[in-house]
Length: 219
Length: 250
Picture (cartoon, rainbow over the protein chains, first blue to last red):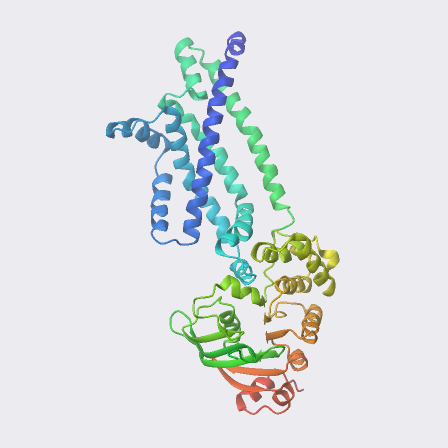
């Protein structure tokens, strides 16, 4: 093991980790919005939209991120739509994550008892207020475990971003292996980098899950 | 004066569920201000559905419902406006589990009526005090007993300052020793002159609180009488049979 090599390239990995993290952050944030929108259209059975959403969910969940990225990065330019690597990565991750987030939130929405809506209606709340004050807070708390699992899953999925020429962790590792044949070192750094990102998030997620479970509400 | 003496009037109401089961047939009756009407009847007779129609939780197929002489079923008035005048309490309490007692009862006043936290808060504390739950103000629903939950649910409805209260089998899910504390609250409301429509299976309570008993069967009014008449000498054979269920002999 070449420790000098390792210490020399740690900064490069740190920079790549930031790339991975910032792309993951925006992709996941977008996927949460998409998921919220989709889950609400499915929950409220909005005509037409619910069909579009259902089709999207199937398409997104049943195609690999790698294929989705290829489509965005190499496919779309053929019809004149050129998107930057960063945008491709974020859009791709959001496209994939949106359906997973939607399903996670939908299970939460469906766990809210029907009586809650009727009780809210009978104090005069309107649809929007019911969603905001009564349904969503309960649904989200039920959905915390699957949402956290999705976040971790999506961060791991970012490892295919290198195919659209982004200098993320995977890209840096492959690059170093190709340049210097320092396979062990490069891979060790890669594993440690992902752990450094994901372990804290995992721990935070389980703390959050426990807190939601023991919060002053729920059954 | 076009206004009638009746607070609530129901005219020729028809209600059927999807699939065509008729629940209420050409149903008409009226409630005066301050009157306490208890609705009795075998299960499936349409009692609960009636309450739910009055509150707009169930769509109706025909007929009119008038509150204060104004139609609430013509589609012109928003239900969120009407429901502020109609308080409803459910069998399963349906408190919002993610909110404290105080947040539960303030949600409507703050978000629907736009009242200030101070003013509604004072009103809320007064009402909680009246039902003996002021010290539970900051508790979450799951920390309360069934009877306490139901009293909070009543307060939540009262907070909107309704003109009429609808009670849908509010003690049916409670342990016997908790039934009393809830019924006492309703009795006190009756003494205060609140107009109420009560669906219940508590016969003693019905007898004590009702100004009028409405006995329903198969979506129609079979008998409408003062409680002493209804329980003393029911006119119809159907009502007699129903009341016999509550008699035990060894």
